[in-house]
Image (cartoon, rainbow, N blue to C red):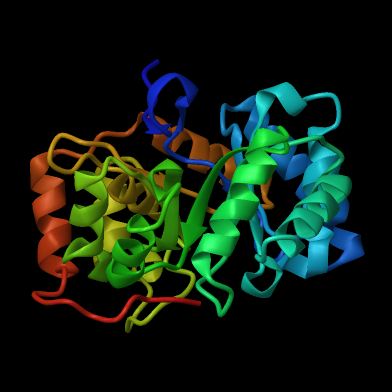
Amino acid sequence: MTISRVRIGRGADSVEVPAIGQGTWHMGEDQHSRGDEVKALQHGLDLGLSLIDTAEMYADGGAEEVVGEAMKGRRDEVFLVSKVYPWNAGRDSAIRACEASLKRLGTDHVDLYLLHWPGNIPLDETLEAFERLADSGKIRHFGVSNFDIDEMQALATLPGAEACAVNQVLYHLASRGIEVALRPWMQQHQMPIMAYCPLAQAGSYGSNPLHDPSIIQLAAELSLTPAQLLLAWVTRKTNDCRDVIAIPKATSLAHVADNAKALEIELDMDTLTRLDEWFPAPSRKVPLDIV
């Protein structure tokens, strides 16, 4: 079985991860759902979805606690991603925020630590904090989230920014604005994208493609679920490069299994052409879609 994978980082410190991981937004908000959430994440690990994405923002740290429970005895299987609030991303405050996340996660390091969105603290302070965290072994890679091309270009001028490993942004079939300028810039700089809301759970669009009759029919023709079709599209190769990691959330074991199967799917040109016709990319730069 061949599964789609994406490389994060450069050189000897780089690592390959599955092109589909597990998101945790809205996890940890209801204690009655906690057991199901833990089981879903563990089932995903069983099926090869080894990247788990979370944040100190999600349920005020509750999602990190769910992830920590799911990882017990299995930390070595997980590529762990968490995020820091922009107002916690100062020279010293980022250190404290990361240490608090590590405590909730029950681990001594995260594999990838992201600035959740651009804020008012100077980026050079955040980069300094990330470098200190890396030097102490508390993080292995760092990146950003919700950065548009102008913000990525500004980041790239700062010392240490060359180590930025990813940019996590909203991206799905009905929200393709990043394809105009941001994604080409990131491909040029060999920096992958992490796509949140890959099943079109949010963003600026009309109808949700997950429930679109054309998508449902096409998925049936291909013996796929609509979710698998959308995930295979998000993680498709572009310019012979696979550079997108999708992080759908699933608390149903069946949905987790569906997501994992999408790692094996390669869409043919006819399918990609039909999807482009139904949900075309914008012809010019649009504001970054953010939720």
